[in-house]
Image 1 (cartoon, rainbow, N blue to C red):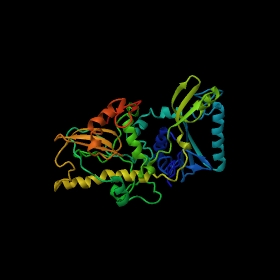
Image 2: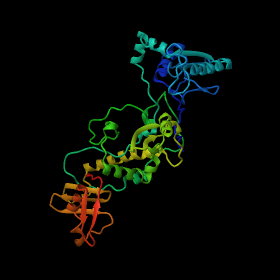
Image 3: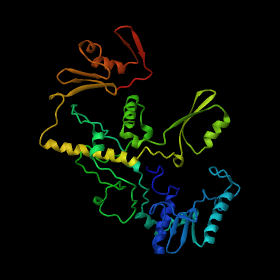
Length: 404
């Protein structure tokens, strides 16, 4: 079972705290453990700390002015909007932790955020930043992509590749057991069989890229019911269960001002609020990642390796083109027009003028083909109201139509 929060301590840390600790470590002459070079933020005496040096028994704490109630930057009586308490209370709580660590026998070195702002202006630190990069932890879900989704111009052929994902599930190698987390002193990348977070210079001679890249803004995605239905079916199929998103959007209806206020101040991520009626408000939201429930039926590593193998496998087949071609299902013809009404419901025209129609649940003999054919499928997906003849007359009304 893969931990839903990952294999490393998932406490929050700031990028500036990592920069400060990596800047200080060479001058101290010792390795300072922090959130990105060990197994997460060190825990000392029951408290998560920003950095810890075993050799000197020293705890390093980066104090963000807003989160820890800095008395120089904020009035002590000001209510912190997230914690719901005064800035003075936050500061006293943090000072209590520091006092406990000192009494336990640890040395303490602190850096206040406003002091760090001044440090960043120095020439020494500017030079340090030129060669320093804060690399976030590897997220296994970043390696989880589907098939190739690109737009190509040209003629369409029907070449069959049967059950690619089940094939790689059976014949390809997968990792077993829990991983070893490696953050430094790397060997040659060919010596690892694992997920690797790295930068890659893409080769220029690949028509289909092996390594995917999400380049479109999420907010620019247009609603397309047909594509959504097909994608949902693929994600919920056999292997897709391993990669299931555990933090799905939920919809909650509220009818009182009190419930409305509770939804707004809760730690949930509110994605949308709308009013279906004047008396009811609807919230679309997702859970805070820290509160996502563990699920023993998912394994993002298996899902990621499935799609990785599936992207690589066609390349071994494409190499066969040097010696011959695949079996052409159209006997040399090409598809000139294609229309679909959903999964296993499609029709297309060929360059020789013939038509092919496939509709799940129907045997397309001569009589049925007079009604169910390319033109009727195209009309079905293009119009909002379609009358079907044969037997009793029925009318299908559609709220939305789509064309693939």
